[in-house]
Length: 186
Image (cartoon, rainbow, N blue to C red; front, top):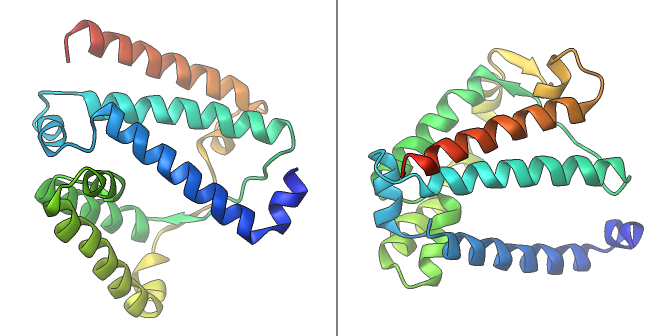
């Protein structure tokens, strides 16, 4: 099955579309596609968005490493740098704070009829991606490669050989944090 998937671009596209619909559905059901909830998160009054993100991190971390352990996937780590880790989040944060949606939640909001997400979010994604593609060759050498720190993950830089030691510890920390946030009524 896995080799068939690797060799079939059509099957990959179909699965990508199906997982995309599921992702959007879950974002919608989690409430994180609603402008009011996102704005309350940014004002530190409602932690629904943070709860969904942290739950997704734990699920993804366990899922990816479980699939890796079974030989279903290989990790293709990308290198990072200060030139990508500083401007990227700043641009994302400005757009997120201004519009009240991130790329995923803007598409989810469009699905339930939010016109502001269509114009500001989806149109913004298309324009931003086009501008980035146009200036990428100039950015690559001047900014994006500045302060390169290689393709290391948290698991690579810690002294443990078994990734599950890190995964279990991070999972415990996130679950404890989520428990405290829930108990405090956020």
